[in-house]
Length: 191
Length: 239
Image (cartoon, rainbow over all chains, first blue to last red; front, side, top):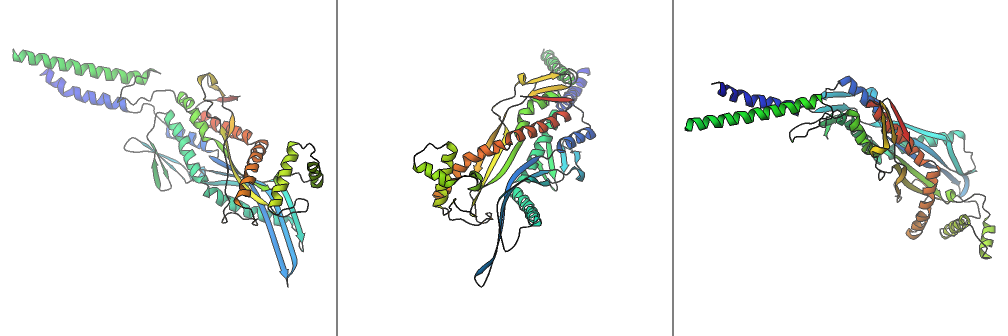
């Protein structure tokens, strides 16, 4: 009779010890790991440096006679950063299947800075009109927008997303968690 | 007799069950309480390794994440000539077969190339071609970080990190949708010759502009940030 009871209990004990040994063994504090994620994401996850060439050319003729020929060519360096805007909040969720889901805002362009100390003028031609100081700034502003568009087309946001996921996975792998998924806006990408 | 042998069999099974149970239990307890125990069984979810140790193992992969990317536009011929060059003097030297420095030979090559596309450098010129290069720099991942490159003293860590190198260099072919400058009549052969020449010069130029230093600073910031968040209190880099 005693033996029969043992036979009933043993499989349960075996199952219990199996589950116990399969469970991740380090307790993880959400605020701590959230702070760690915030710490590493404080740095922009990707940066492109542009040496941009800006050209301004205006030519006008009246009755076939040229009365305006304004040309300007100069170079300027711009730095563009992309990453996660942490003010939009991050969230860590424990899912029912034991995995972890990290909810993050979509990566975005965080800054575009034009370094005016790098302006190098190749030539200026002022026939019929002067190139003003404001002409430079108008063109630099337009260039900032075109650089933003170009960086997005080159995949800066996708790269920022990829880098963010990899950095966070490093933190979680250190805690022994490999089953981590990411939710960006509405889509969940499992890793 | 059959009853006896059945009883013996049950006893044997019972003993096997108990042994397996005790084995699993002891492994579980050992994994919890003995640092570095690390006994691996196929079904064991073995996570008891040091947080920092794993981060160190990952440094090589982390360093792969950090790159600096330049989208570098240059203007041909302006970026590759000295505005003070006396072309007449240079041409005269050439015609007399006098010695020309490497720089003078390059300038002469540019002069002839420009002439072939209708630009005469002896006058004020407003014609040009913009060439876009993509230059990436990052850690040289062939220099693996080994245990000899890491010195740990308490919560302080000293790391010898790989050198930074240019990891990618390409010259983009322009397309009419993205080329926002006046067009110039350059045939494919001339374009190839110009870009081949320019590539060598831009590699030197971006190095002078500090692309490698920039990649090194960015890479160090990146690794430091992850290590500090992993519990290290002081991170020192050595070359």
